[in-house]
Each structure stands twice: as C-alpha cells, then as structure tokens.
Image (tube, rainbow, N blue to C red):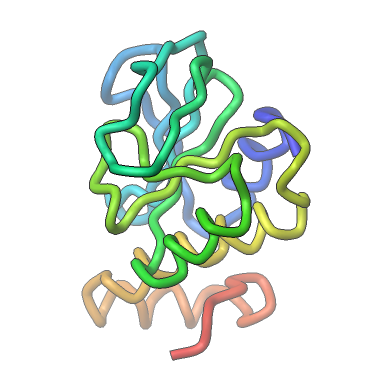
Length: 146
C-alpha cells in the first residue's frame, strides 16, 4: 500500500472527512470531528532517535500513516513489523506510525485503518453512533466487534 491508496481507503470510511488543521503538510482524517488517521503530504523528517526506548523512527515520514490503536495491539504490531513504530508526535501508547515500505501487507494496513476508525467510532456519543449505524450497513462500516 502507498500513500495514495491509504488516502483513498480512509476516504471510503463512512462519514470520513479530510482536513488540514496543521497546514498543508498533513492530511487528517476524522469521523464526526474525531481523528482516526494522519497522512503526511510533504516530506517530513523525523529525529534520528525515537523518544520511545527501543523504537526507531523512519527518517522520511512522507510515506507513512499514523493510526489510533489499542495499546496491547499497538505493541504487538511493533514487535512483528519493523516498519511500525510509536506514533510520531502522538501518544505512543495509543498511536502507531506505519511506514509504507512494502513490508506491511496491504490487508494489515487496511485492518489497522478499520481498527483505528472503530476505536474512534465507539468513542463517539451514543446518538452519533446510532445515526451512523442507521445510515450504513455493518459490512460498509467494517467495525471491530465489541
């Protein structure tokens, strides 16, 4: 998966919006105003050493995506894939940054986008969740089970 494919996949999520609240460098994907994905547009360079012990950051973040993630799942993914690290400039306990280097299968990245979307969806107000669930089929929503 590459940046263009990831952006397209995020845009297919029901009621997803894309904004540039931090300037033109980062596309931010939201559902009802809550962030579920960040995709850098321009070349961004990370510090050589990650602030998280044992984690390394890619030098060029322009080909990456940052996604919300359950803390246990986030750590497990980092242990499996060297291209996944704690979220860059985000809470590393709850966010992962995935480098689009070809080492993480497309199906896994899509699954992580769905997971991030689900976490944010379940954090919405009950009325908002119900309104969205009435509007969209469960297969379209692709939510993690609770």
